[in-house]
Image (cartoon, rainbow, N blue to C red; front, side, top):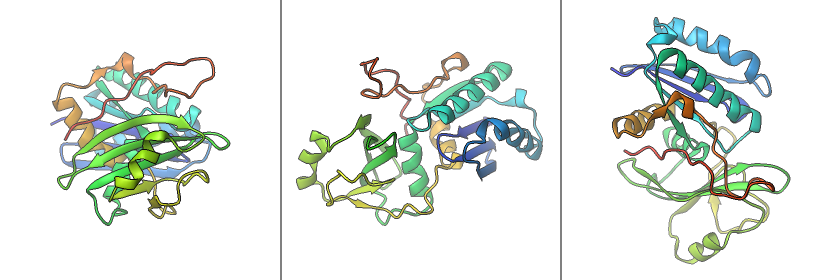
Length: 238
């Protein structure tokens, strides 16, 4: 039995899941900018509901971005703190993949297999785009990792004429080709419960990291001062 905590705070919602064996306790609230005030009380209530102590945690998955600058760092800080206190290992997970897995779990996809374009807003007219391929058995593979764009990326322009099942998730940029069909986003929220299985799979595959490595993802193209590929989240295997 692996006691697994998952944390996602990169959006207006604070989403937490604590899995003890097959039992999953969760908290999911819209906090806007109050994550720093509420995340610890929410975690305390979660552990009380599960009937275990923080020190019994063995594995922590967290949304490592891209997303809200402050929100991503809250998730990383909490994961690092609890990880060190409990001698847990961590799995940083890309927010774009959490978006896709949340959409699949919520039934937003008419066809779960195919290509997915995930969109995460950044600032002004800039958006993080990533491309994933999903299979009928639930496997998910990253085709293009998250990167910041302010215009249609060449790889997407080249892909569209031969993409039969490309679906978009998230807010659609005005500059994006209208041929990309987007799922309705009104109720689409990043859910920590969708992280539990892939985080455990990553752990089983030996991809977990020491708690000190609970760090945000630094996305290529996101900073005018730093131009490198940065740190990538583990892509949990199925």
